[in-house]
Length: 284
Ligand code: ADP
Image (cartoon, rainbow, N blue to C red; front, side, top):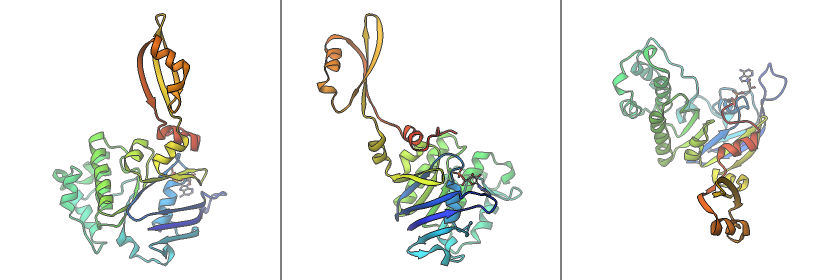
């Protein structure tokens, strides 16, 4: 769907490039996650790929054609849900959607989408009266208004409670099941785990890793077995290599001679991997 080659980008007033030689491709029908600490260039990448920042260096192919060669018809194919919801606050939700619908040839069923995100009863309310979470959901509906083939989503569940976040994630998954392609940024590693087929980690404006979440876990993962046991009224914990613990004399001694309290295998989380690759905590 997209092939990005040696993409670099510089904001005119900045000395250094914000994006440096990014190369990656996004396959038709996959959810591709763009991850990395705040300020690393995720939104900038999305803006370049949606033709909002045309002065990039390198090459981007969309359906094997130079992105620069596309005109306004490009926007018929893509849906964009960026982080800051922009709506006309004096208009109702429905009036906002009607306005944006006019920009497109194809239209989705607005009532169906509003029903799905739990806004149907609020459709005639002015957006000024909406809570932040309601605006985020309306923004998500807006991204789907033209029945796009590709969705660009920047932190789509930001500010949503678990129930609404679940709804949005389900719709994203259904979008992929129907053949849609998604480029997603999020700092929530649980969302990544659930949604992303592949992820690219950005660090210092460049790509540090691209792979499936599963392969990254295998690569960065420490496969360990944690054993908690009691000895002389003391609680002790020891960890063993998950691949060799069965022959480890210390492990055998514990299970045969001590009182085991808990045993569990521990898998490296994507949060740990995020920190290892980018050197930054995920909530920074
Ligand atoms: P992220 O989405 O990963 O948080 P951004 O793409 O928003 O990161 O920002 C990347 C870098 O580019 C940051 O250092 C930010 O300050 C800078 N930047 C973003 N927008 C502009 C702009 N309009 N002009 C100059 N610098 C910008």
